[in-house]
Length: 179
Image (cartoon, rainbow, N blue to C red; front, side, top):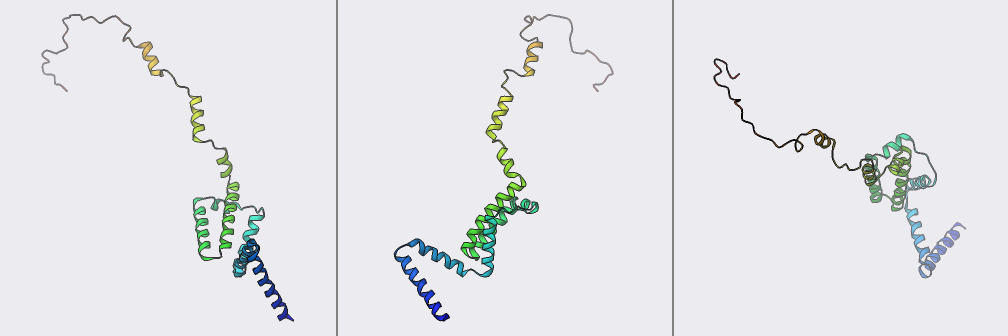
């Protein structure tokens, strides 16, 4: 009885593969994708289910995990783990992990507040425009204004030379020293 059911299922699957090859290539690709799931170990299957649940469900991130993931070391660790999964585990699981890593980064940045800070931080061009508006270009500085008001150059009479008997050179200083 059981042998007949197994033969019926295997012949049905072979007929499905033949029909898929002839009529619809999409079904053939789905069947190949199902083969990936059949080749997965039990641990990989559990991980795939956990990854899918994490992506689908709105699971809240703990603060400690969010701060660790939202750091440079966390980004490098996620990248290294993704590369490891691509080389050593099932490719379906690795692709699922890429989505999990994206969600992990998005949720942790929302939890730590970096996403909000980056959203409301103006660009350097906006900062420069605001600074120019607050500090208009002055024609002359304060020092130049004071010198223009108080300096006698250009406002006094032309200099005239006067002859006097004063000589700035000392004659005989006696026993005094230069020091």
